[in-house]
Image (cartoon, rainbow, N blue to C red; front, side):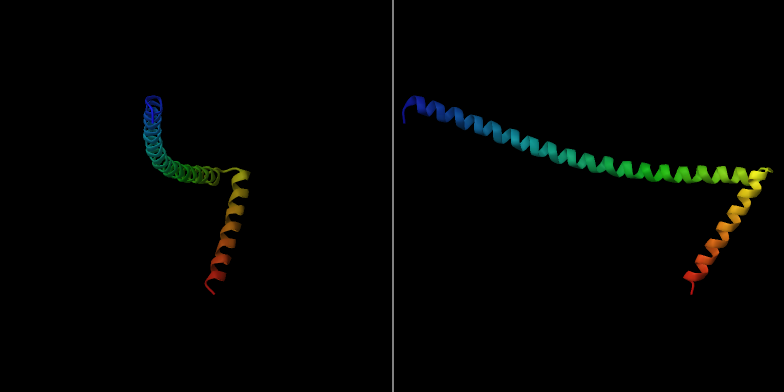
Length: 97
């Protein structure tokens, strides 16, 4: 092997080492990003659950407001709620058989 070939081989070896180091760093970065993604996904799922819970509470408050007001709409709402409660009671009775 002559000097030119040795120099080319040395340069090539150095570049391969740099590439391997860069690959290792990217693997670590990818792993860290996956962990961060999982953490953020869990937080997002929790926020979705909280949102749905708050939305349900809001709907309950709206229903309570309608039920406590003395209008024709509240009377209709009370009738609908009573009907729903009867249906739920029937379902519970069927499940208990």
